[in-house]
Length: 74
Image (cartoon, rainbow, N blue to C red; front, side, top):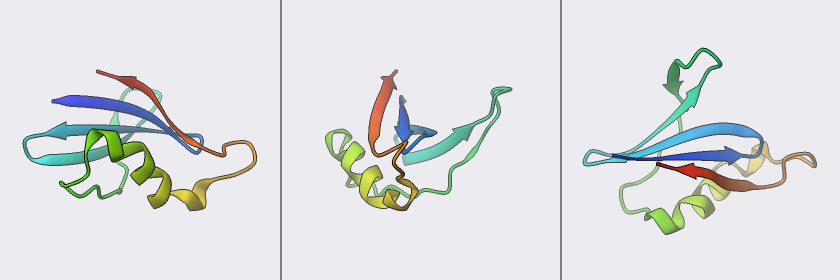
């Protein structure tokens, strides 16, 4: 399983790719994870992921948080 930690317009989103497809999570300060409620189709590739999240969540954009970027890949 590959895990990507993204900053999506100021929100930390974990994205995991497994044999079952993509899963998205928000992680709380105490380390507990809950579903982020974002659906990523199986045909989206790792190289397309940043742009897909930008397109999907663009309503979250603000002057303070104008972009989506990869923080870390594990």
